[in-house]
Amino acid sequence: EVQLVESGGGSVQAGGSLRLSCAASGFSFDDYAIGWFRQAPGKEREGLSCIDLSDGSTSYVDSVIDRFTISSDNAKNTVYLQMNSLKPEDTAVYYCAADRLLFGGSGRYCTPLFEYKYKGQGTQVTVSS
Image (cartoon, rainbow, N blue to C red; front, side, top):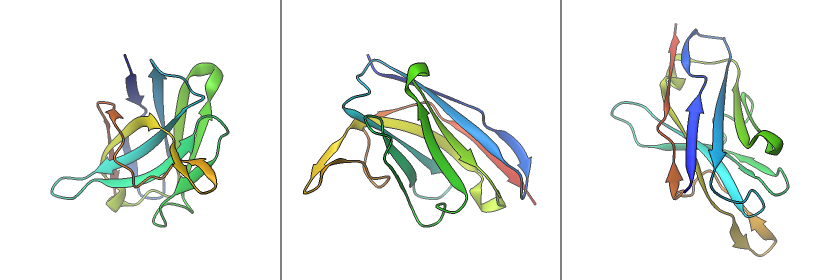
């Protein structure tokens, strides 16, 4: 059974930082990617970043590429999202999600825009001005 458990959310002032964690279990890291997405009240879900757990390749959406960093510690079965220079508009529930890697012309890859099959319960991030 795939399980994803997020932690690390909280309240922070604008300009601050948070590191979210996603503890994953129930699948092989050789074949899966984990993505982070967020959803604010009244807004659509927004994919942010993903990581290919087999080789550490990453992908980001333009809105966070200069501020957020995704990484994984496969020995701990944990993926992180380091968020710096936070803005009030980053306020949302943040989720990690997992699914098998996609196949394309250049081999396997992940994209933050994908609808991942397995999702965690989310962790609230609130950024005050």
